[in-house]
Amino acid sequence: RTQMSAQLLLDVEKAGIFRAELNVPDGFTVSDVTGDVIDSWDKTESAGKIQIKFKRKVLGQETLTILMEKTYPTLPESMSFTCPKFTQADRQTGTLGISPAVGIALQEGASTDLRSIPVTSLTAARGKEVLGYSFRKPEWSLSLKTKLLQPCVSAEVFNLITLGDGFLTGSATINYLIENAGVQELILAVPSGWQNIDITGVPTAHDTCTGP
Image (cartoon, rainbow, N blue to C red; front, side, top):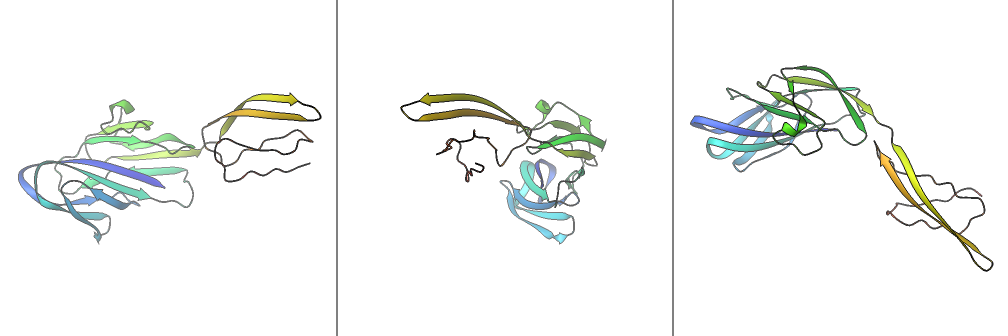
């Protein structure tokens, strides 16, 4: 699933407006529209557009947040993006930040009307962006290539063996470092003959012992 959050600063001059129309990028559906002046919004009036109604006449600056999403049955090898655009706007400028989910690597593809900028320059950065752009008009487009990363697991182990009268106990304290992508299970080889094995630490759904 791809999520797009658009924080839009409306700057209305000369005459106020009671509603606005937004072109939604192809393939995306709007999940929410928020803002202090929002009365309601309707995504069914016209394909690819939403109508936003305000509580009062808007004159001056107001901030709106539009949440959109696009689902895929499997991760595509490439993705394309265009700008959510207000149809009444005489001018629309801004910045664009791209943040991949854990386990996904991105590579820049073709783009039009976008200029690369440091992610630290993004106006509404969340701290997880890996690509940043600015644009001077809303007709920009961007394509990205995607790749699933394989997890890289490393372990630091401290073993302790205790000798007693007629028994032998052992323990292993393991610090795992998991990078690139998450894992849902870990496999630990236990020396043959050891019994009464107990696993503690991070909560687990279950642990299973197999073998002799």
